[in-house]
Length: 73
Image 1 (cartoon, rainbow, N blue to C red):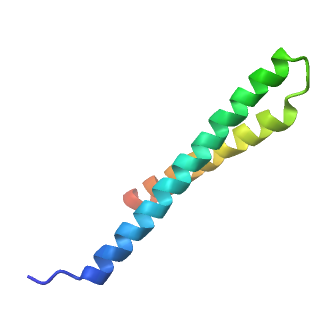
Image 2 (spheres, rainbow, N blue to C red):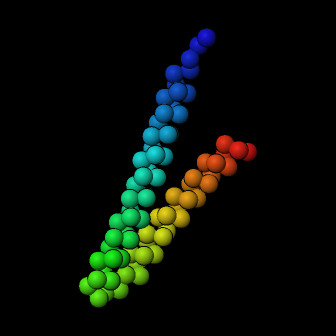
Image 3 (tube, rainbow, N blue to C red):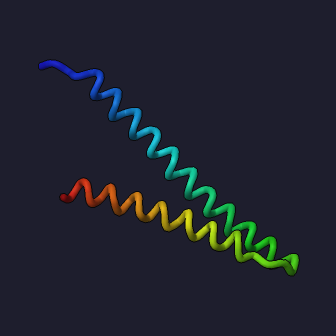
């Protein structure tokens, strides 16, 4: 039994980058919602923070759905 180390390293690298990207996007969404709360408390407008947060969450959802699609299909 031979192990294709190059393929294993490639899968590891892609998985690591995808994980860091998804966690980063989700973190930006949470920060955006926190900024919305701060802006609302100060009496300002929070439309940009809310829109950015929902966009980050939508991208996370799309990435997870695409991953599930790749596994199931």
